[in-house]
Image 1 (spheres, rainbow, N blue to C red):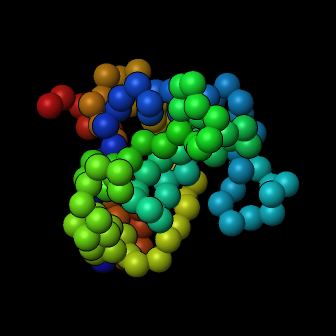
Image 2: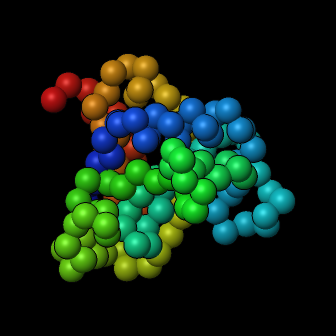
Length: 137
């Protein structure tokens, strides 16, 4: 297990970040629904693809839609666009076979956006998940 994925900083990610900052109260994955994180956060999720979504108790919806949370998929891990066997095998190799939701601090994404980063890179190892902004190309 181990490898790197990336999330482009696009309008949807900016919308999720702004929504999370605006609505504040953020849930903690796999905890009592009445427990909230001390700091605003996003969820890094692996299930049907690998994606980011707001951890706010108020769902962030796609513009003009009411049905699902707005999510931003990692490059190559969108089940709506990428071939199933490829993204599923790569996801399992990079971050393991189990589904998960992990809270990640919103501040990294805010700094990346303000700093003009093009993407946020997520590196998985056996023992850690590390995030960093990608500036430039």
